[in-house]
Length: 126
Image (cartoon, rainbow, N blue to C red; front, side, top):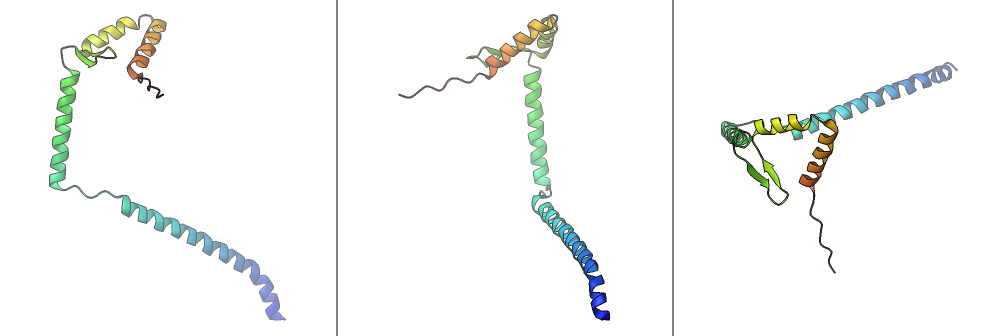
C-alpha cells in the first residue's frame, strides 16, 4: 500500500520534471541553432590583399564622388528627361529661393520627382 501512495504523489513531480527537461531541451536546441547560424554566416577574416583592395576601391569611390559633387559646371544627368546636375552652391541658392513659398515649392518638387522617376510606357504588342 505504501508504494501506491508514493506513486500517486510522484505523478505531479514527474510531470514537473518532464516540463523542466522539455524547456531545457528547447533552450539547448535554440542555442545550437544560433551557434550553427553564427558559424555559417560569419564572414572570412580580411587578409592584407583584401583590405588593400577595399581601401583602393573606397578611395576611388570617394574621389569620384568629390568630383561629381564639386564640379563647377552644369552637366546633363538625363538629357531625355531634362535633368541637369549643377554645382551644390547654386542648387542650395535655388532651393532657398524656391522655398520662400512652401506650397509652391512642394508642388514643384513633387512634379520634378515624378518627371525624374517616370518610367517609359511599355509598347503594346498587337
